[in-house]
Picture 1: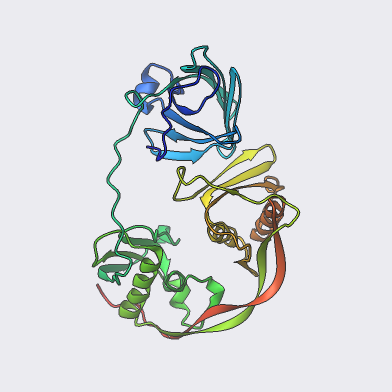
Picture 2 (picture 1 turned 180 degrees about the vertical axis):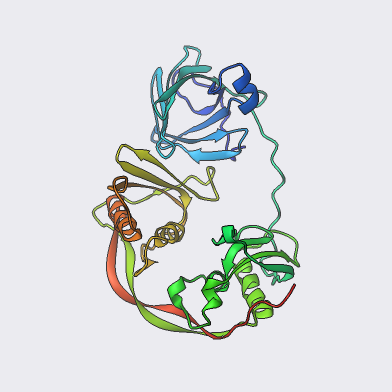
Length: 367
């Protein structure tokens, strides 16, 4: 469930640290509940040395856990807020400190929600599939079996997950595979025939090594696939590009490190707040955040010069994108402004970046 459950006995209205659980009656108690299932919710709350609270919320039947944006407690009043999803829970702690009675509000809808303090005997758990063990760090896997077929007309978009055991790519071009293999942007791929980007493929490939590959191991396997099935020959070099370097604003507060007990794989969510869009990164590294932002930039590369390591919770408030037609340049400019308001700073400059120069490539060999 949640890696760090706190199951201490409540301190009779002096603390709300612990695990609280309840069922949200979104679909009532009749047919709707039997069809959709009223979600079971678990709040895990921890108290810091300075007296403040932090924690997360788990939808126990869905397996999703996200950190709470804020937690306030002034006995008996309790408030939990998660800004990315746009919900808040306001309740009152009972005199014996064993329950909280309150209201869940989200998207202008409100539902009663009573939370019970959970003990080791009563806490809800979910049965999750056993995680796949990682491949050995020194393993050098290849794709043992790979099926490559032309993509259908409705699959003309690149979709794949480098964190999965099997490569399952749909609507993917050879150029996309090259970008994945070298971890670069499209502008850093130079040369090649017209079909490099125009022809799309569906690819299913099974590694010859058990376990879950690291991201770099997956990239290496894609590189081998390009060599073996597309007969790719390429060399690398460097070329100057205009970039936006992400730095920290010395006058602003530092980004908030994320709690590794909540959403350890990272995530991104967004919601509308009036005319604004609230974009929240949780458990995310700065390069992961930049990779998302870079999807909106056509002329500039984004590079990380913050010096930050680890994972962070970062919230962007994006203004002015909900009215009228919006171009990718508009989105990019709005993200830059939102990042600056969140304590970052962009510097425009030129920097040498890796380029992959295509010497030779062929359409993939038959399966």
